[in-house]
Image 1 (cartoon, rainbow, N blue to C red):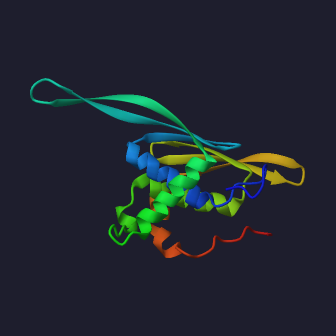
Image 2 (cartoon, rainbow, N blue to C red):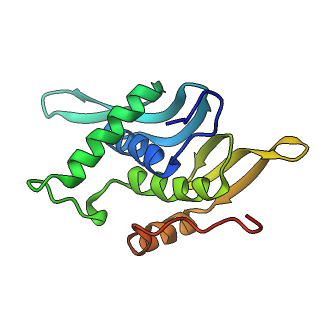
Length: 173
């Protein structure tokens, strides 16, 4: 995913999309994602269901889970996602894809447009706060961006129209 050691990551749109698909499968919420030199650390809340009593009353206990995904794990997730989407037996449309796969894809597209050195973001009530480490002429600096829940949903709705179109170039690039 990196052309060479220390270089910026390539294709956040697909990388984050594949992580989002994993999160959808786990049923995770309120996500924290930190890019590391060799992958990502992802933390989120999950509800563990438990049965109790003869009537199988379901009680849920919320807990925090943390995963470390190395670049090889991400590559495997991406291959699995491509296979799932390309499968003729499981014609998956954009509307059938889980929320985090969609949201992380559109956030990843924004990140690709910015060309950061690394990414840190967290979710709070459906909004995403993103911190990007950007290279500049005087060194590196962090840039903060926020996507409200409504903005994320708007980007998700517009995503099919952007498919196969390259990201917009940065101003002055």
